[in-house]
Every structure is written in structure tokens, then in C-alpha cells.
Image 1 (cartoon, rainbow, N blue to C red):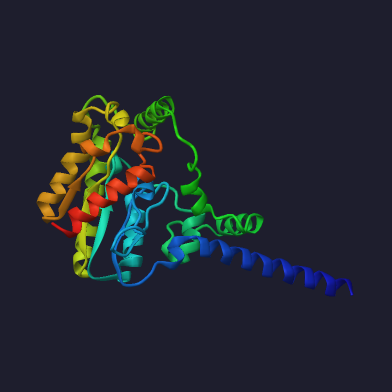
Image 2: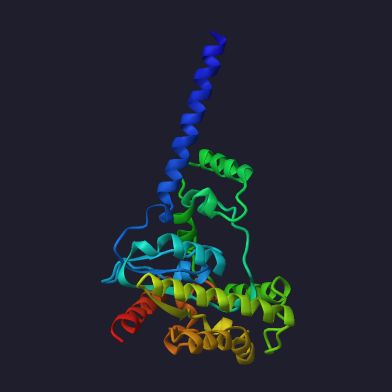
Length: 294
């Protein structure tokens, strides 16, 4: 009788874990990307908050994450390219200092839910079960919805946005090894990193074209607060020059919103570089015109 009871309990636990995991997967937009899309965007934190297609006339999917590096952009592109219509657009989003890092940690829950094990770099079985356990502890809380809604109702002050910008700068200089955001100086280590990422973006462009999709490079906007922290010479060295070289080599279309005047006001941002709902609306209206009416 005891063994039967233990067996029932174990079965109940397994059923609960599976149900909780599937519930979490349903809340992950990467688990159910529609077919026959007009466009998809890749990208990191900027793109996660800046892009939305619900109020546009085109169907699209935001495949950005917080954070996400170019190597995972490339993996997601390969996984979801067939979800596009023939001639669909792939927006490759390239924010400040995106070329200065070769990648990050990909044993995060969002990828373990959406991707096959063989698709996850350095798949970790132990990490997988930690993700299942996390889902079991809070099966009715949608992590992905919470990420976007955590700022709802919160209006950051100028002081908070200044502090956020200072934190970004500290990360770029301390974690990425940027010499100073006030100069265009680039170490040889970072030059090599930039070259490798340029090649990766070129490979993504070629892959899009092989699958009859049009790649478009997007430089997302940042607020005047952030733009005052980073010198023009630094932007040129770490972003503009690498991007323009890619454009020259591949003849790809590029849209630059980095310092666009109507997207400079800090009132359009959640922090110093991620658009709020008002900013997103202005940006998406301009983006759709530039992409589809050009």
C-alpha cells in the first residue's frame, strides 16, 4: 500500500511538472511564432521594447530578448526564417556596442522552452531541470509578459534615466573593455571582436537572401540623455564604421534612427535607451513607412 501511494505521488509530481512547463511555454512567444509573416525582427533589449506589430498593417514577430547577442540572433534567424512569406523582411537590429561582444550565456529559460536541445549552445541538463522547477513554482506567472509590463505605471525621473545611462556606460567600459565612451579608441582585442561580428552579420544577410527574404539593418534610437554620454567618435568606431563597411560589402539596406530628432526626447523612453509606449508608436509608424513605402 505504501509503495502504491508513493507511486501515485510521484506520478502526480511528474504530471504537475509537465503541465507547469507546458503552461510556461505557452506564455513564451518564441514557442508559437505564426507562419506567413511579413517581417520578423531580431535583437537585444532595445528591440525587445522598441518593436511591436499589433497596431500595424503588417504581420510580424519580435524575436528579441533581454539580453541577446548576435550569435543567438543568427540561430533564431535560421530557426524561424521559414515563418516568413516570400520576400518578407528580416530586421537585424544593431544597437550601440553590439559588435563589441561575441556572445553570452544561453542556458536561460526562454531558450530552453523554445529551442531543441541540439539548438542550444552548451546545453546543460541540470539547468534544464532548474528551468522546469522554476516553472513548477510559478506556473501562472508569465515571465515574458512581466518583462514588458514591469515598467507599466512607472514613470522614471530624469535622475533615474541619468543613472541608468551611467550604468550602461560603466558596463560598456568595465565588462566589454571599451577604453572610453568619450573617444574612438579601440583595442586590438575589440577590433578582432568587431571583425568577427561583422562576418556573422554578413552571413545572416546571405542566409536571408538564400531564403528569398530581404535583410534590413536597423540602428535603433536612444534618448538625448544617452547620446550626451557617448561621443560621436565612439559611435563611429564601434557602430557606424562597422555597419557602413557591411553595407558597402553586401549592398544591404540600412535605416539609422540612433539620433533621429523626433526620437530624442527622454519623455519617449522607459529609461535612457528603451522606448516607452508613446515612443514605440512613433518609432513603429516611421519604421513601417521607411521599410514598406520606400
